[in-house]
Image 1 (cartoon, helix red, strand yellow):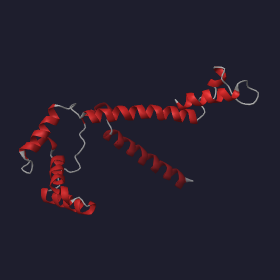
Image 2 (cartoon, rainbow, N blue to C red; image 1 turned 45 degrees about the vertical axis):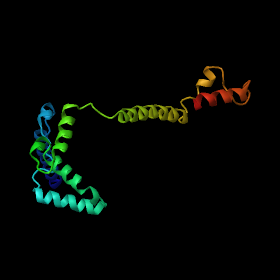
Image 3 (cartoon, rainbow, N blue to C red; image 1 turned 180 degrees about the vertical axis):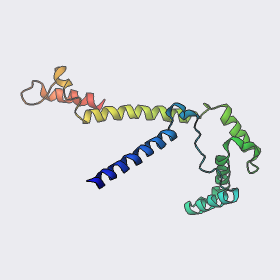
Image 4 (cartoon, one colour; image 1 turned 135 degrees about the horizontal axis):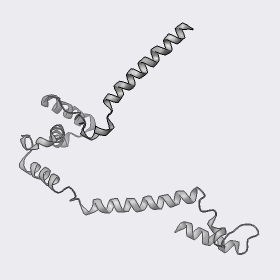
Length: 165
């Protein structure tokens, strides 16, 4: 029994130590100030470009290898793009425009978002109907159908048209 008690005390001590350590790492009040480390930070340029080449070969993307290399270098140092020699002036101009005109997007992108939003709303109604949420409205509006219901056949069509719409 004393072993059990010692074991339990050990676990409690470890748990409280873990909780205290965790509290130090997770500071919700100041979480905005915490910086997330760039996963490409610290990788030497040569090693980074070798990884990009290996990726391009593995995925069959050798035809755009130069673009992938530029992208990796830019992702490694996004705020310092002006000093990346592999980027030409046209690349830098595009990046400058992206930072100064954040909401300048192609019309097709906005249309895609609108159409997908409408499709999601329609899908939501379809799922609601499939789940039986609309089984009570025919009775409520006097268009119930089934055995013993007057005008059952036409009411069934009306409910079907409502669901199809």
